[in-house]
Amino acid sequence: MLSPSLTSAATSANRCSQATIATLHGLAAAAHIKPVDIEALARLLNALALNAALGVAASEDAHLTLPKANAAFECLASGVLNTASGAVRQT
Image 1 (cartoon, rainbow, N blue to C red):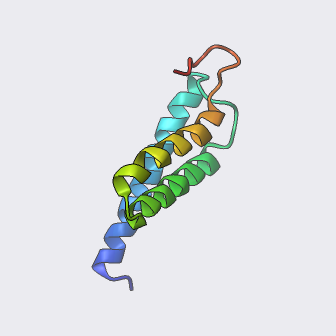
Image 2: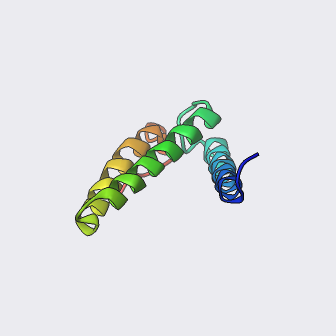
């Protein structure tokens, strides 16, 4: 049996995954993202975000590391955007 804190963390992670999946389904329905397996994409994006957060937290200069992590995350995550059809305009 999991401890209450582990159960709570697992529940929180599951809710995050479900929210990400729901958001991605909406983006896919509007043709804002490329055709891709939504559940796999959600897992990868959530893992990317978690690892970025851990990297920022472990950094000696978090205030300098955070903008770099944000830029790298945006660079990777923007690859799924459906810009070819003009459905999403990148800024």
